[in-house]
Structures are given as C-alpha cells and as structure tokens.
Image 1 (cartoon, rainbow, N blue to C red):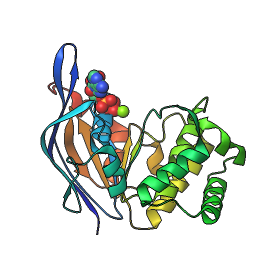
Image 2: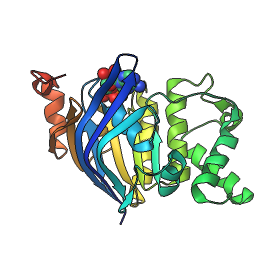
Image 3: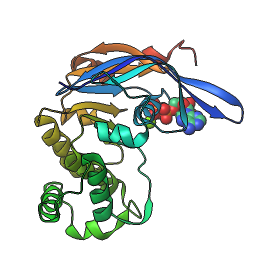
Image 4: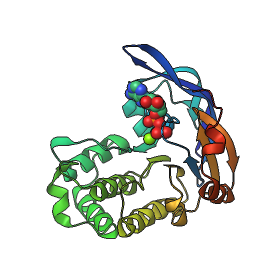
Length: 253
Ligand SMILES: Nc1ncnc2c1ncn2[C@@H]1O[C@H](COP(=O)(O)OP(=O)(O)O)[C@@H](O)[C@H]1O
Ligand SMILES: [Mg+2]
C-alpha cells in the first residue's frame, strides 16, 4: 500500500534579502485511498508544501524527511518523483507555448509510465477522459494553458490526473476560480480517481466549498508553516463557522 510520509519538514525560500523559513516542521501521513484536506489562510505555506513535495527548485528543504513507500522522495529529481507517482496540480498552472494539450499529455504519460502508450488505445483513453470532464475535443489541439480560462486550466489539470493515475495527488486550490458547474465537473473527476482506491489525495484549499463535493477523511488546519490542528470532516464545518482567526492570532510570522 502506497504511503506518503512527511516528517518534520522544514523548507526555506531564498530571496535578495536572504533565506526565509516557510515550512516549520510539517508532519503528515497520507495512505493510499485516503483524502486529506489541508486548509489554511493565505500565506500559511500551503503552496510551498505542494511545490516542495513536487521538487520545485525554488524551495530548499532544510530539515525533515519525505518518503513514498519508504523511498526517499527528497533525493529524487522532479522527473523521478513524477515517475514514482507524485502528481501536482498547481494553483497557478503555467503556459507551455508551442506544445499542444494532446502532445503534452502523451509526453507526460510516456514519462510516467516508462513507455509510450499505444496510440490507438491512448487516443480513445484521452477522448473518453475529455468527455467525462465535458471538454470540447478541439481543446486537445490548443497550446497548454495559453489563453485558457480559469476553469479550462483546472479541467486540464484533472484530465492529467485521470490519465496519469498517480499514487499521490496533490491538488493545490483546484477549486479556485471555478463556477459551480465547473466545480461539480472537476470534483467528479477527482472523485472518479479517488474511487479507484489506489490514490492518496492531498486536497489543498482555502475555502470549504469544494468539500461539499469531495468528502475528506481527514482535515488539517495549516497556519504559520505547519499543521496546527487535525480532525475529521467536522473540522471543516468548524472552520466554515469560525474562520482561521483563532489559529493566526498571536502566531509568530
Ligand atoms: N518563491 C517564493 N519566493 C519568496 N517568497 C515565497 C515564495 N513562495 C512562497 N513565498 C512566501 O511564503 C509564504 C507562504 O506562501 P504560500 O506557500 O504561497 O502560501 P499559501 O499557498 O498558503 O497561500 C508567503 O509569505 C509567500 O510570500
Ligand atoms: Mg497557495
């Protein structure tokens, strides 16, 4: 059973003014089949956690460990992490000019699966996944994220998720900027992947709205670069009612 284990993770970012510690001792275990919601105020370090797990070079791990099935994730390159089964849907997906969605997906699948998918089954796979996400087939020929609306970007992320079938899916604010129909479609995509039972999901969100569609097994409050409270789905209701203030008041920043 695939398990992501994060232990006492410390991460800093470098800037002209020096090094700033953003993550201050994150402890979290995500098992296959589980969904963990990470909820916290803006600037608490949620995206930093997502990027650090995916191996973004801008973030320096200064302490702690991250393992997937006992393998040291922090030792792996970005590509190796993807191949090991770590998937990140970014909060702000980047444009890839000159590369079509279709080529991008095939290249990603080839990299992750270790061999090029058979063309005939692949075309069918993509077509069906796009239909489920209510995406226009013409979308496949557009350049990745170029001129995409917020909703199109997020659907494209979930399309990748459905096709790549990772062991650990990190979804950073996948709900942001979605209208209610897009939220429903995107959530049902996440739920389909979840129901396959073999993915652990880290659902990062600021708002509780998406949790009406994707039911988390565990909810964690993230503040000041660490998890400050953990509970079940009921913790999200408490956050909805009371906000984050109680966690940010008096927190060292
Ligand atoms: N690449 C970066 N360079 C400088 N500061 C950063 C960088 N990434 C994040 N930070 C800082 O780290 C803190 C946490 O940011 P972030 O992880 O984006 O929080 P969240 O996703 O919870 O809103 C913020 O103060 C932000 O300004
Ligand atoms: Mg963020």
